[in-house]
Length: 292
Length: 329
Image 1 (cartoon, chains in turn cyan, blue):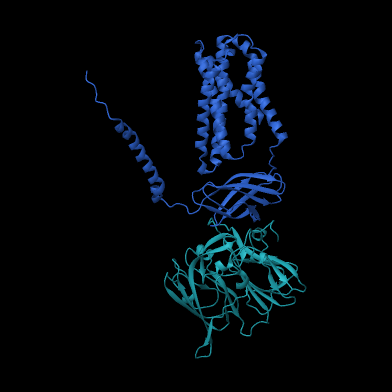
Image 2: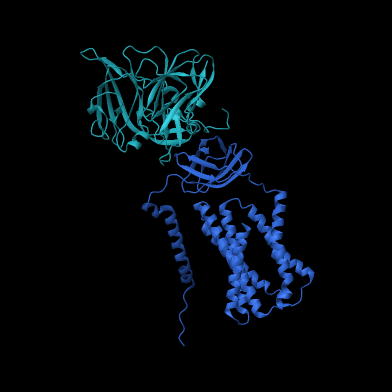
């Protein structure tokens, strides 16, 4: 994009951050897989909460609260009906939880009074993954706004028992950072780092089916959205149906709303996509696919 | 007669040097140990202050200063809530350090500009330009314009005043006191205005540069200088004569008395920062206050008369200035 015009100045040190939007885009954590006596698949995960300063735009450091040192946290993936056991160690100075969106026993809800973990303590969230779809998890300790906004969230994908057609899958958590703590966001992004996919476009293949899991966790602004340029997508709302709901090129989401988008590109080129709140676009939520 | 025993010289020296050494020691302790810092958290990061925004076609330049004690790093710049790429000679500024941030941005005339700088900690410093306009360059042509302004506002009025001098000498004492009080009334309003504007600028200056103190320094130094100058001027024979002085002297006087208005106009035009403006308004306030003092001195030296004349002159002066301010707007 050159050295002038809209955008940030400089480059983020992803190595120092310990995570890279280019990589966590396609990272899915299926856990350690085994089977119980009844033959049910058991997936075991380990996750820790701790504080970490992360670079959310070149040179701008945010005092994040993280799951496993990254924002968003790991993308958990299971199949509907799997038993999920998540061992959560709270290594931070504040109480935290993991509250999963999904159907589970209320004692596994991850809220104050049910699965809240004090500093230095551990808890195992144990439930059966359902329903299939694209979901999310986040901390539900009080004050809630702080605990979510500081970075304690991630995607939780439950596949249908029969699976879906093979595709190149990606996950984008739409987030924002109130870096000066005045209740308004200074920086917007897909997967934390402002303009990450504008400065380094995501490589895609012509005619390859793309499945994009989009989760909105943006705080302080009521809605966020995603819009593809020069293309349309099949929208699977919350990913809970095998049939698409709508063919469109923009979908708007309140906080915690999430969808699956399926699309493919017919010809090579650099395709823009971004949130269609232009005020978010110019503060970091602007991206490209490089189709070859 | 009893004679006090002479104190040895070394004791006198010790009496002077001892307290001085102790004072120096105390200063070092205060600076090194900073005992006040125990009472409150000190900021880990400096504070950025916008000193000057200049607009050229398609370019915004912002002079920033670190107004805090700790260093501060400029990380990102946004214009009207959009990140915009920038260049700066330095990104990290030490205490009182400055740098100029340059952004190529298609700003529009008369539209507001909201500028924000994000530091490395995510803190933001913001500045609003109410209506964007091209910053006039201080070149040959504008210098001429400002000189002309100085001539109109300074040289010509002083010349007219001096030409009126012989006539003024024949004015009856009551009218003289009225005119002197009128002058004080006019100038009193000017003093109030320069104080108000000076303090306003001082508050916009970086806190670390102490604009209010700078204003006071300017005021004090110039008042003192003017008092000294006034004593010199009163020795010039022109004031004593009822006749008009020779043209050569007159021209020199007009230039000496009115010419500084041209310099003032140039200085005012080049006052780039609120800090400099605060100092300049201090100087202006001091100068005007000294003149008020001088005229007051002359008024007190006049023959006694009705206080009503003096009061009337003062009120007419103040009201006249108010009328000018309203009409000039």
